[in-house]
Length: 607
Image 1 (cartoon, rainbow, N blue to C red):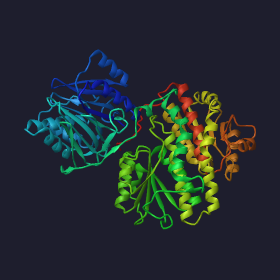
Image 2 (image 1 turned 180 degrees about the horizontal axis):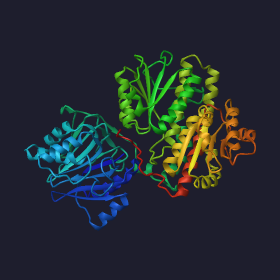
Image 3 (image 1 turned 120 degrees about the vertical axis):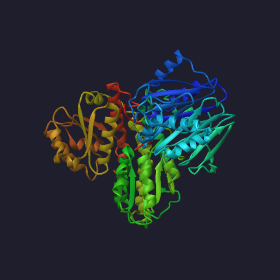
Image 4 (image 1 turned 45 degrees about the vertical axis):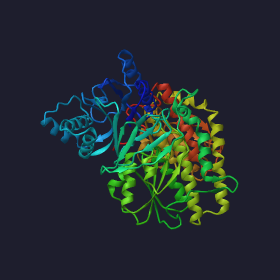
């Protein structure tokens, strides 16, 4: 959500800033802009909509300078217009900002009373005026920023440049990530390492409350008390080549087809294929000793956690609570002292999940996280981290991050079952073998993608779509509906199959497709009964099942999507693929922006 890039450089900075903003498009945005210093003066260009619009503006009005900041904005306060686009600036200072200033109304009222005139509807503009106010009271830029930061309430990351100061840039973070990059005589700021990938592989991730002064080729970091601090510099393996679409039409399509590889990579980290045993890093708790596991996540990661709950409770006999992170901390759940808490996030920066983590820290929980970004805030604030090796995920709609999260949760459940004495060596070997086979089965299914395009053509004509499943297929139904609605802009809902007759059955007629996930197994007969109830009421059933399940249902379904026969334990991982492809192809048919759906952001760093 929103993106920042800043360059304190030695060569023309505008093309580098624009290129950096393009790498940040995956975060979601509705306007963009850059500001540079030209002959000591702040100059800027902004545009509503996509970066191509900004490029057109720059083509007409070139922007010079070797120092600059850029921003992609996802509107929170104020409409997505050019006037409200970042950078915000006056003749003395320019600012780009991610996050929300919660007390901006009070600050704005105070500043207006002091004679300041505001041009935008945004919360960010108060930062410009506060810094300017302190500069005019004879404070240095560093002193002005330090004083301003103490007045701001909320979550934010900022990058700031000053008129007449070609040697200076200041950044700060509180609740929203900011990375510092070291180049050859140059310094960089970015929302994440991906933004800086082609510029440098030497990255320092600012910690909560940090602010940094980039000056004279050196970076000085201060904590929230303005004391100088040292933060580690790490070498990132990220590269610009890793985020190209290659021969694929969209990033989402590419990421769907990368799943056999990234699932295999993730499995290789946690499974010994010879012994058929799960091997985990050292955890901050003993599964055998904890009475309950408390988990929290948002969106797709929450649905992964829901699947995980079935696994932990069935395989390890370990009770597990899974909450939507934005609700969890506000209900003030009582937690057992020295209990275990699990957090799941693709970006590792999701503010609701991070806030839930911090709540459990106050409740003296041992914290384990599943993230795709090892350097993220959630990873850094956890006692232990289970990495998903999905690689960069650019499409806003999560695909490979979801399936690799499922892989890690499955491995954790197997390890918990062994530790708690609920899983024999033979049973662990059997389930581990099923996991090892998933990459090959995923590849087999993806080679038969074409069967879903005809179904997508029909679904694109519908106004409402229902998804249903039982057991671990129920959260798959929720995830399928989420994926469908977020990129096709069509209404879709997921249900537990047994709940259909408790209300949703009223929606079913010949115009409503119902997508059913039903692997053959212990719950299949129950789901088959629900399918017949839907067919009897004219519903158009799209059945996703294996050969045995499709044969058992017989005639009556409108479409049958056959997937390889797998153990019910790993079925949620494999069955995610047809759901993703249905959503993808429907969105392509509808002509929506598949990789950057409207109103959505990849990394949600504000509440």
